[in-house]
Structure formats: structure tokens, C-alpha cells
Length: 148
Length: 148
DNA sequence: CTGAAAAGTCAATATGGTTGACGTAAATCT
DNA sequence: AGATTTACGTCAACCATATTGACTTTTCAG
Image 1 (cartoon, chains in turn green, red, yellow, cyan):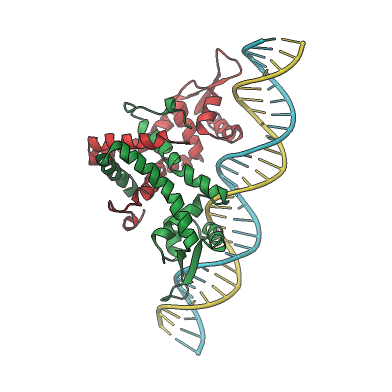
Image 2 (cartoon, rainbow over the protein chains, first blue to last red):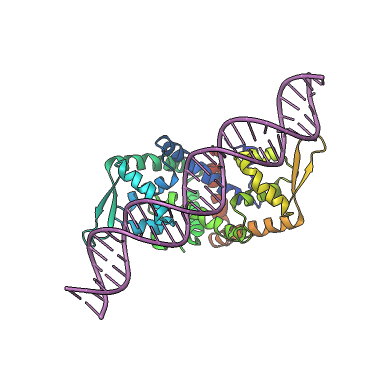
């Protein structure tokens, strides 16, 4: 657990920088732990997450959105396929392309991972109220929109 | 630049998970680029940031808050000291401990790095209003408070 | 004086990423 | 039809960053 005394207060102009760091850590901690039990890492999570949200998309789409080299993707993706979590099928329109989808076990694991994150968010949103949730989203969208 | 069409909308219950990911990326991109020019990485940034905010703290404090092994810290810290960005002085009370502080050049670099992050935040806060800023902080503190 | 603590350092190792080169199958162009 | 391009897979070399383990020096505390 983080030493709360080292967290910045509302009056601290530097605070948001630390807040983002700690929030991100808190947010990834539980899924990381679940993944680690099966020898998986954060990239596996991102693959599962992307495939869950965009079933039927191609490997190249995954590559583009993850921003890694195909060699870096290859290992983890192969692993997930070998584990039966991700399924690969040729694109009916273009035989070169491979379309990705989750098996039922893959969907189950993905749901477990995302669930822990949604629970954390829901708890905080419930504490702070719906207006805070909407404001938070707006700010986060503003930040995300200037992503490189 | 991230494909904005792949960013989630306000109606998307999964959205916050992606928002955090992209916001974090956007947030670290510029400092990372500045650091890369001098052959430095994110850990150097965290060191500079911590030392800037907690001048005079010991190496062990830095170790504890960064959550890395002392061997992992050793290289980057040594580098920063060699570059004249971080200064080391023995603790007046305990001769074993080394206290860390920034040189003026170190403070300058740290300010530049943090500045880009504050600018990004200020821009978004200015767009969304002060109420949104306060709400955002509350939510982020809620998340950060459950950090492991 | 002895033992414990703070810090520095070397070494071996693991992981996760990179780029480069190459192969294969399928689509597309001329 | 034949040539070129695209999508994907894979091997290899490499590099950065982290780990654990072991050891040393200095200094504090009993």
C-alpha cells in the first residue's frame, strides 16, 4: 500500500502529476496480479481487451492500436491462441488477413480482468457522485485526445 | 497521433479503462521525448521528480517510493549525479545515509519536464472549467488511494 | 568491540522490447 | 499470366530495464 502521507493534497499544484501515476498503478495492479497467475503480462491484457471490444478485427488493426512491432505482438498473441483464449480465422473478404476473436474462455478471462477495473471505478464514482464521473470523463478525454 | 475514432464515447461503459490508458500515454509522451534527447528514461524522470519534491530525503526513501530494487536505482541515479543534475550529501545526523537534492541544472530540467505535463493539464482544465478540475482530482485521489 | 544498517557495486539472469531479414500465401496491377 | 505488393509469421541479433544474490565499506548503536 502506498504511504498516503506522501500523496499530494488538493492545494498542491504538482499534485495531478502524482495522482495520474498512482491512479494508473492502482488501476493496473489487480489485473496484473490475475494475469501473473497464468504467466501472462500486460500486453496479453491489452490484446484480450482489444479483441473483446473489436471482435473480428485484423492482426494489423491490433498492431496499429497497440503501437508495438509485429515481432513483439507475435509471442504473446501466439501464446493466447495456444491457450485457446483467442481464435484466429481468415478474413472471408481477404484471405491474407487473419481475424481475431475471443473464445468463451478468453471472454471469461477478459471479463474478469476488466471487471476488477470497473469495480474500482464504480466504487470511486459512487463515492464522488455522477457529476464527478462526467467531469472526470471529460478531463480524461481531453487528455487522451492529445495522445501521440 | 491516436485515431480518435477508436476512442470511446461517453455512452461506452468500458470507456474509462481506455481513457486511463490513453491519458497516461499522452501525459508521459512529451517528458519522455525530452528525456530521450539526453539518453534518459522514465526512471530518471521519477528520480528528478521525487528529489525535486522531497529535497534532502535519503536514498532509502527514494527506493521505497519508487518501488524498485537498489540495483535498478543505482545506475540511473549515478548517471544523474555524474551529469551534475542530482547532488548527494551525507546526512548530518546519520553519516551512513546520503541525502539527495537537485542542482540548479537538475531543477531546471525537472521544471521543464513537469512543465509540459502541467501545461497539458492546465489546457484541459481551462477547457473544462474549474468544477471539472476539482471533480477530476477527487476521482483521481480516490483511485490513487487504493494503490497497492 | 560487535552486530546491524545504509549505501555502492559486480555478476548472472529474465523479460520485453527493438530492427533486420526472410518465407509464404493471397490479392492486385499491368 | 506474370510481376508486384500486402498481410502475416518467424528466426536472429541486439538492447534496455528489471530482477536476485553476494560482497564491501562506512557508520551507527548495543
